[in-house]
Length: 479
Ligand SMILES: Cc1ncc(COP(=O)(O)O)c(C=O)c1O
Image 1 (cartoon, rainbow, N blue to C red):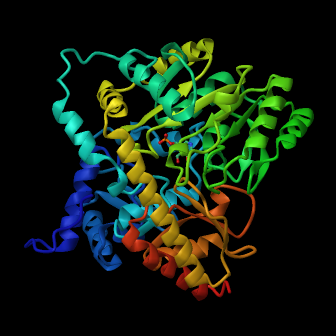
Image 2 (image 1 turned 180 degrees about the vertical axis):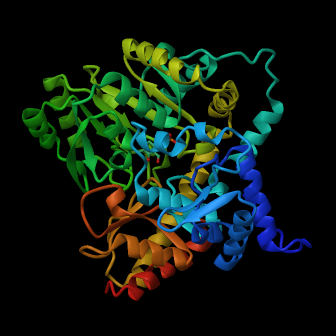
Image 3 (image 1 turned 60 degrees about the horizontal axis):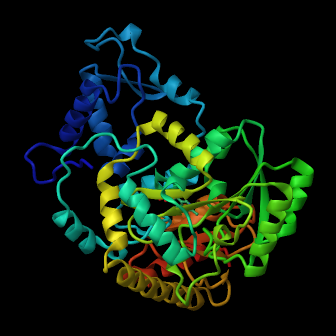
């Protein structure tokens, strides 16, 4: 991200004025569009607000921007060389979009992280850089033959990756499937998106766990679905709640994350897995099993996935490479009945013509390589170490005032710190203290909770991060 050069002979405000003028000329801010506020820009660029005030006044003096009280600073219409009267109302287009925006807290967190990359991050749901198999991937990339033809990929996914996944699912998850029952997607997010947009219609009712990752997904809202919640205890959802929701609302699908669930870390018990499947087959109800975390299990394998126990074809299984290797590769997959895979492959072709072949080729090679299992073993050890660090830090800093379940896998810890704390104030104070976490309302309905993604933080930062959270909580008199 650009920032002014403090060693340059040009003053900071003039550098900022020139930078903004360039953005205006390039069309990033077309005539009539709003500029970020002085305060926000100062935060982003790491300068005093007065410096941005000077830069704005420079741009105002040459007629490039104008400020009106109440409506902020805008790019001038009059002095534009274009045909300003005909500039489309871009903000209106953006505001009128039928796609619901991401929750404001998520946008706030991502802005804070962009502005200050030094923040201790226990908010982003991904692995820290040191846990990714970067060395192994670099070696594969240097050894792989360059492909002679880089055309569009098969819309169902690169065939050698699907073959490797058939072996992987059988070996590591006890799932028997075939290449034609697999669809490779851009992360599991795209699998969820395709299912929601293509297999459901506005007004349909679905059930999700409360709290859950799905809770934060605006795609349910955009699709016009009615979303009902399945409360969780330490063993996952209560299967009978599914039947009740079906009776009351005729739910058409159930979304479950049974292994080391995001955000609670819970594992659906074996007994409940069987009951969920019994109920699903009794009601002919599809279950979407979202399973990105199972191979992070610290102490032995988790129970068999619903998909492996499913004898009636009720389950669509979604997996991902994001939480066991690297989210930036954007490799996810879905194992589903052939009719569904074909339908969704057709839909995804309308979206992106298929995924890039290059990461698919890398992952196919890595899955079959002798480095894959040792990588998983290292990942589990390191995650368990971080889990131990975060739980010890919470006990030390919060002295019994933070309640949590110790996860036995995954990257998240769900913690209750007060009956109903003011999330916005705690988040802002934590950010000022150099730490960022996931406010509980993003994931569920119970007040007073927060998500700590220990898998994202560097081990060396965990103690300082939890101390910064405790200091923020004390400053706000939360206890
Ligand atoms: C339960 C769950 N499902 C799906 C995803 C999406 O991950 P990706 O698209 O990177 O596979 C996440 C990411 O945090 C998740 O926690």
